[in-house]
Image (cartoon, rainbow, N blue to C red; front, side, top):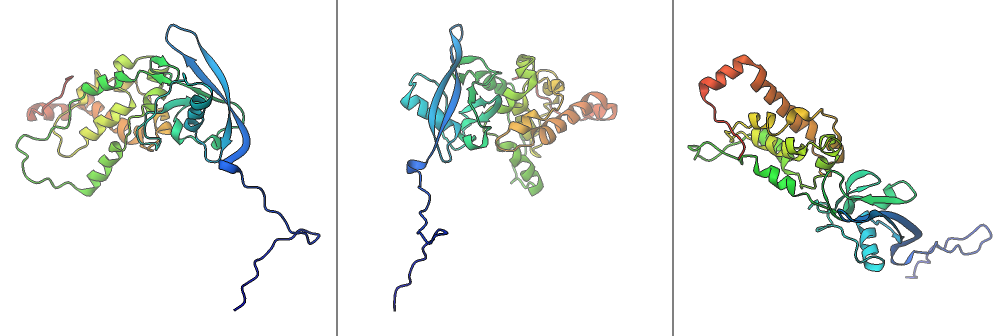
Length: 279
């Protein structure tokens, strides 16, 4: 059998049309300009401008690594998995809190890309901030506590499991903590748990096998009432957790019940339900 003759594209004059050149190594032929914050507390601080070659599919973290490798080995940033699952590379790109490893440069407006550290946390160096206060806040929240005599095999409705799973998707990137105006603008973090930890408390409070009552802690030390549900935390969450609708608002309703519903208040007193205070 004769071999089939491959199709050859021709131009209007019958000439063989040449396919467009394929960029080597994925280079697009364009150059990216990045304005990256550099500085340390108490020292000189400002923005350094770098240019790097654009690569197909490049994310902001790729560009930062390119700068570190070829132009500025002293530039500091934090990262780990490069798969949008560890939350380490959180920063602000063009003023918006994002994960650098998940932010493709071809989705950003044309022009210089500005990269700066998270605003709501103390600066360590360049793009690295001190997020340790989040771990201190976490210690204030009493852990999951089942009833002491609940030793039988647990049977939990799937509906409850599905609701709890959303809270467990949090990767602790702290973008929600950074964008929240209570922390970012008003600097009230000492009186405010913040969205990430309202999500954690919601996962505990709505667990059908947990017996603690953390509402007093939320209303007092947690500062839940400071949140005015702007939903900015939901907008930046890389795991698409409905922080405001499914965690903060239900917790606000529970705290309001504890303080303003006299019938439920009396019933709780008569039952002697356990309470949780600061650890």
